Length: 284
Image (tube, rainbow, N blue to C red; front, side, top):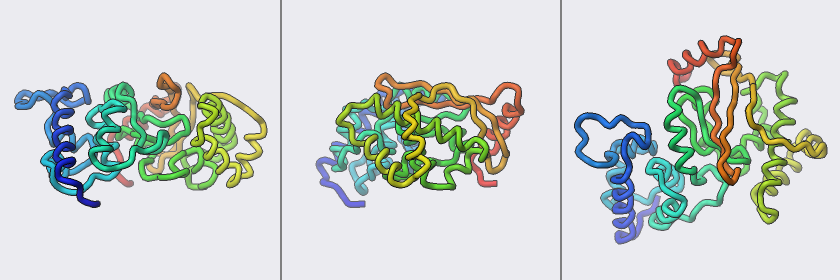
């Protein structure tokens, strides 16, 4: 990464310190502890929440080191529960362009992040209306796999579903047709809810129409339905078939959804969820 101008980098460090000082550990799901010398979060706690090394974050606050990546800025904005305006200002201080809405670096509403942080005993994640995963808790990674590494059109799980056979390994083959129909109907509903001048949804739809005959045939059916409460079966590489309830909480503008997964009643999924917590994200 490239270096930055010293004055702006110093200001970036000061801004990070000011935002860190205002957050209580309980606000981000951390224990307060008996010997806390600072009113807000410690540097090592911010580093942990952002997935950065403590040394790297210390350098950022000192106004030294290298220019943070766009992914790191997004992670810091989430860790520090920044508002959308504060997030944009952080990108400005880092000399990085503010990412377009809907991509994997999109700003997550602080209220959703707060709720996600409190869902410690069940898999949960925040996605966009175009099924781009923005943030996952550890149990969601353990259940669904890490979805943070995709960029461009492939960041959307709907795009991967119709263009990458590996994406379908998550579901039993017998469920593929139903999942395809549900994804297409949900995408049409999401696109209809957006502004007529929106290009993000239109670009995704055009890409899928060009790449997938299955998507094209289903799109012609004109089914429209948001995915809300859903019961589904998932293939886990270590635990086998897990039947879950997938619940949704929509943001006010409909652009983001908090998903959380609970064991389906009448199945052995509750026991499998307990094993999932033990396994974590380790490779079996």
